[in-house]
Length: 123
Image 1 (spheres, rainbow, N blue to C red):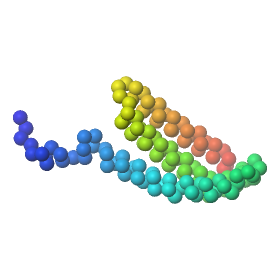
Image 2: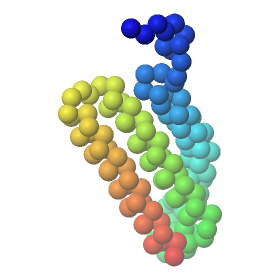
Image 3: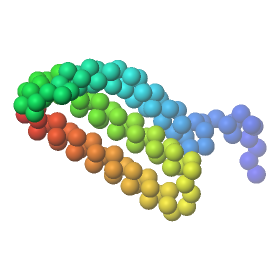
Image 4: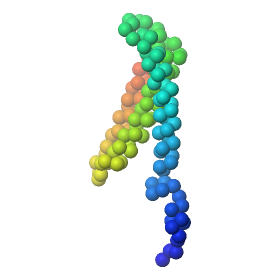
């Protein structure tokens, strides 16, 4: 029988031991998106309705390509972490693990596809 006080039992980072790190990750990605999304909208808005050649020429410059790539990567990371929490809260059993793996694969595939497209335009 262990004679532990309530404080000694509660010492640690909670039951999952990762809540603070996850919250910090979501906060940092939210602040990043708070800056990146308006930048992306302003850079994308300049070429909205332009011809194909003008869009290619615009996104071949470093600043718009970097802003688009960063928005895509940070957005997909935020999506992956947020949907994982949603699945963990509302799905139970074996379906939970399957959906988490599928969601992670989907987010990485979307980020890779988008980065490939931006790199192809920019280079």
